[in-house]
Figure 1 (cartoon, rainbow, N blue to C red):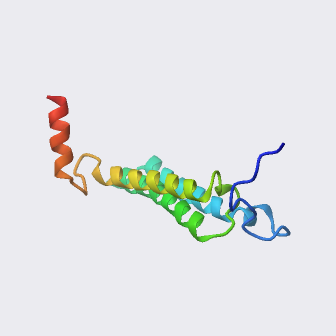
Figure 2: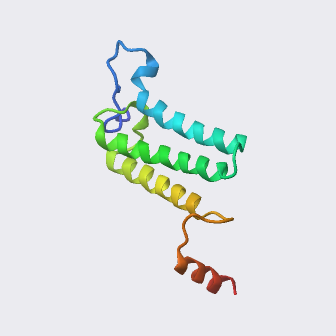
Length: 122
């Protein structure tokens, strides 16, 4: 009659630890994503939009690694371990890949993508 907790959704620290310590995996991912958003928002240097976006992607990749390596990750567990790892990993990888390819002056150029874009637009 009740919904089951996701696999690995238990506390990441003992129950007598303060609440932030019990949710350190989630706070790590959120903190790294927050730093990335802060870097993008402040626009402190020339490539800050790219670096900040890569930090957001790295936060999701960190979440995938934590979800794989730790037996309990607290509120970072949303679905099954496999689904969370795939979701966090694919989304984080795509965000980092897009941050590397963003214009102007992309750090990563994939030639066949330019040809595909050219064929679809013309």
